[in-house]
Length: 305
Image: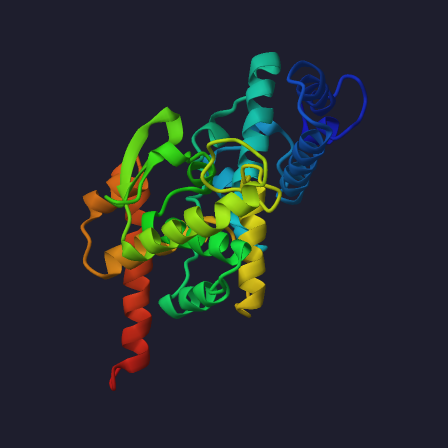
C-alpha cells in the first residue's frame, strides 16, 4: 500500500478507514480526529519528500529522522509526543487491518516531559499580600485568616474549603484536613495563623454568617461556605492590590509553604507528610526550586561567579 494511495480520500484508503475508525468506533472528539489526521498527513508528506513510497519501508532510523525534523521546527515536547501517539496509533491500526509493519513507531520512545518548576512567592511578596488584609473589618479579617492558614499549613484549596469548625483546634494549633483519596491528616499551624483565626471567628464570621447556619470554617460575604472559585477570587484581589505582577493561583501558596520550609532546613519526609503526598517523588520537585534559588543567589552575589 503506497504513500500516494494512502493520501487519497477514496473509501479504500487506509487513512480514511483509520479516521472513520477513531471517529465512529473510538468516539474521539472532532478536535482530536482533526489533530490526528493532520499529524498523519504531515508524516505522509515527509515520507514523500524522503522518497519512501510504502509504509512498510519505514524503519526505526526513518522514524527517528522524522522526530528530529519536528525538534528542528522548534515544536514543544508535548506536541511532538502527541504526534508520535497519532502515528503510532495509525500504524497499529494498519498492522491489525492490513498487516503493515509497525515496528518503527512501536519502538520509538516519547520525549521526556519538560520539567516546569512550581511557581512560588518570595517572602517579601507574601508580606505584601498580608499587608492587603490588615484592616479590622469582617472581610479583611476573613481574608487575613484564610491567607494565614493557607501559608501556615500548605493545604490544598479543596482541603481549606472543606474544613469545618470542629476540625480546628486553635488552642493546640492543629487542623484536621481531608486530603486526596479521603485520607485524613493533622497539620500544625503557628501563632500568626492562631491569632488571625481567633479574630476571624470572634469578630468576622458571626457578622458574615448573618442568619445562616452551617459548620464551614470559611464563608463568603453572603455567609455561604466559600468555594474554590471564591478563594481564587480573594487571592486575585489581594494580588492586584499588592501590585504583584503575574498570574496567581491558589497552589502558589502551597508551593511557597514547601519551598520556604526546605530552604530553611526542613527535612524532606516531614514536608512530604505535611503536604499529604503519597510519594516522596512528589515532594522532591521542591528541591529543584531551592537549588535553583541558591544558584541564582550565588551567581548574583559571588564576586567571581
